[in-house]
Amino acid sequence: MTITIRRPIFYVVLVLVLLFQFVRIIDVSPRIASSWRLYSQSPPSQPQPHPIPNLMLNAETKYRQLIGKQSTTLQAAVAEYKRRYNRNPPRGFDEWFAFAQAHDVKIIDEYDGLVRDLAPFWNLPVEDIRRRAQQVRDANFPTGVSSNPRSPRLDNYRLSTSSDLRMARV
Image (cartoon, rainbow, N blue to C red):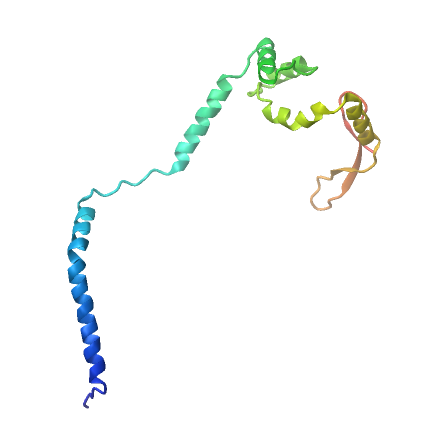
């Protein structure tokens, strides 16, 4: 069996192209070699610690600082409320504070979210708020969902007019 080369010129050009590429690699090789030496001489990089333990430590530290700043007396809680929100605490604050102390509530002075959520209502007239609350009390529309996941249903509740605001099924 004999192998015949049908296109000798093709192979000559291929060899020349490969030779040219090889010469280019040799010409560039000092730069590659120097960068390789720099890379190989650097100490192996130390594995970086995972960020989660550090984040957990920071969160724990912030929490401990927050707990440490909380009021321990009613007078201190009232003073802190006045300092933060520039107004007296709401009616019943003393009863709430007694409840919080009796139930070992850890965070006493943080009302920022509540104050932010109620901010739009401070601009409404008291009569308007009372009228709207009465409309909600008188309305007969779904205000709750049953807790049974197998047979979900909407329940109608009517707010009680008593001070404890129990939910009474209609």
